[in-house]
Image 1 (cartoon, rainbow, N blue to C red):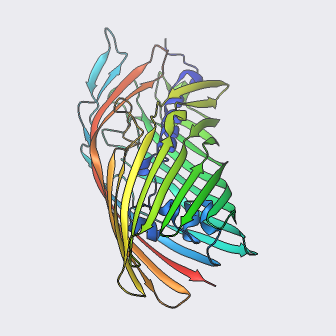
Image 2 (cartoon, one colour; image 1 turned 120 degrees about the vertical axis):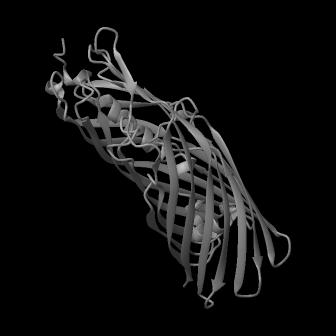
Length: 435
């Protein structure tokens, strides 16, 4: 009855869950908002219309008329989260009609997301009177969680990690005395792993384990423009959608009789596409001391509709059904003197995830960001920037259906039902150098 081929077993569940995490790491809620210290200080408002090396991370046109310079910075983020079970149950195919029991395990689970720090770098080099070349390196997406093997969410996620490092090479030109244009090529390296419990048929037996690792390079491009109109600067930037291809291994272990013959290890390839973005922003100098900032970002998440997984000679698609989003930010900069500038801002950033398909391992929700920062000009060539931000995630329900050993007599289902709440505190610092 249970002579099962491993290809029919739960490996697809692990592959799908890893990729869901990988895609949603690109989503707003768990993307890295700490792109630059100046930007974080005004809640990322008006960054697409800013100029100089650090603004290259937002718009390749930002370096067209700026000075030769570099920006080196780092950011730190602390997430405080809580995940609670709301009636998750597991149904095993035990005669006569199946056996349904509470999933059990620790609930609530706190501080699942681990703190992290990451550097960023940008460089701008004018070439002649009208051209400039630029280089930027930063971490746009990062997630690392550990629910623990004994948590209520173990059949969805035990541990996960997604870390993306982006390298951008850009060129910009002063097309007219008021219009700048820019183009960039991006290379993104993704490193990921994922662990998930796999149930044995005997409720008293310990869980098995599904584990998936993957990494890969993916490529895209950026386009940008800025219009400089006396007191008003307008900015527009586009980031292309990116097709991700990860290569790694998938392992299913710890299954006991009658499923023990399904333990295996095999190569796994995955494919999915993440969103494009279109960002428009403005900076308006109300006075010589005060500048108002605004920014709107549209994210085309509808391309992240499904994930294709290939391993052991077959392909499966895992639905994601993300929706497009639009975030809005406003902020202000105010110079207190020739050497000190303070700033602040607020951003609203909705999640692309749907209420009917949100996993514990992808704890994204709508969020508000409240930020403040300052810049101090240490010398004519050096400026020190710092920022603090508080992110408030809206409370959100968790819902997902994990199906193990699908289409076999051993099929076991775990409809995950839970709730998530949390907030985050971020800090950033950078040093801008004109040379």
